[in-house]
Length: 451
Image (cartoon, rainbow, N blue to C red; front, side, top):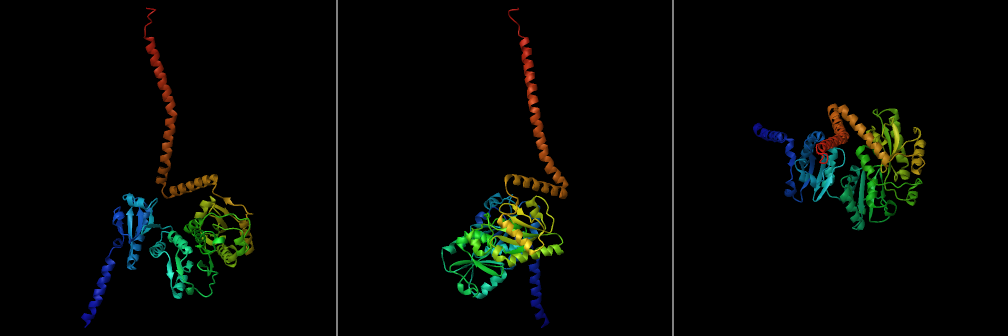
């Protein structure tokens, strides 16, 4: 009896041993140019392009194999592969690879680039978002509530087929790399949701909702780009980059005191970003005070500022240093206009909510001076600053490589200058020699009259 009972356990243990013995590399295929011919239309591929000399690519290898294992164990239909872009220039050219590592999802005829942190969680979320339907139907109240609880920001098309749905689908095709898109009927929405008319596109975020209005919000694509972020959140360099891609911000002479007032003074094609920059001691009193101050203003005055300003906090100042071309004293409050690479600093440290509101009003009214910008002189200064910072970091981490990269072009430049300087003297010397030889030969010709 015990022998028969022990056999299933032994078989299960053997199965676990076999599964654990499968190398992680078995879940990741090494790809080459032949994929262009062998890939089927229904296949979906997650591909990492790398170069043999890229250190970041090598550091990403263990994570890449974990992602392959996770997707396969979850029953995903996405194939995971990696490709040496140097040895397989055809496949790299097809994806227009410009840097390494480069990550894409290839679905049907569309190649979706991953633009975000190179973390396992971020890449897996990207794969799930892109590999599924462009617009996910929410067919019941339960499904709607489940989606609402799992997404900070939701864009939902509500209603029957219409030209607006076609535009919504087109935007989803382009922006699925960064956000989810849903569709639902009016009957699955909470009763508290009031819509003036159908069809409609509604964004649910920050515990509330509001509808897209073409007259006041401009194009649907621009509106979704602006509203795809929470009103207040932790911000990193990738998020700031995405916020800067929200479009050019139109300058306004007056702050919109109410939502209706905002509709009457024009459409904002981008948003400013108000940040509390925190130092290394995140739990310090000043850090916590700035964070709570920015959060309180974002919540209490959401209807007043949400159309013009994103709110958040950021740990460290590496990204901001490149924008201001220097170092700010942390913790600090700063307002960014990412469409013009400019920034605003409060005249004095905002100690109260009233101080911060006055600073916001002055920025939106245009009565406070902006620093930085994207004029040609500012771009030259920023290029010089970034070059200096990069070289200093290189000399600290790899002194020999830094000396070579700096010395080699200087050596070439010095050689070119020396060649240019010595070339005229060499020509003058040759001309003098030629004249000397000519004169000597003339003196050797006898004069017939004197003879």
